Length: 172
Image 1 (cartoon, rainbow, N blue to C red):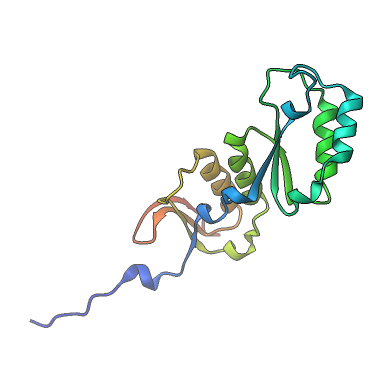
Image 2 (cartoon, helix red, strand yellow):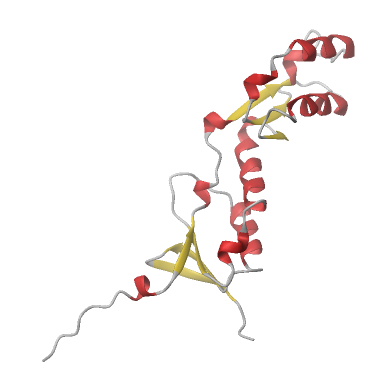
């Protein structure tokens, strides 16, 4: 009986692997600004004091950082205060978001996905990697699937050796 060599069919298929974990911001790339530090007696934001503090702030410490602005105190902060800080960060920070520190990485991940260059996935068989060291929200997978479905030929979820089909473009 003649033995045939084993053929790795997975290796023969041209697959492009997309690992969302690579788009996830690193913890040391995220800086936070807590508006409680600008409140008078931890209760209210006084405009004159706030503007003085903003002028005295060294914004260069946020250079190329992903910055999240939030208020940990139970206080009413006027919308313009967030805007003032965001405007100061505009020329310095890599990106700015209004989010709690717990949700900041997720917000910046969604923005990374939205800005992802999809041309490299055009008419490709794409595997969106499913296992990783970091927990990933369903929302990130929903967002990437919606974007890939516009350009990819096939979308799969999992690992290249064990995938679940998600989408296949209809043949014209």
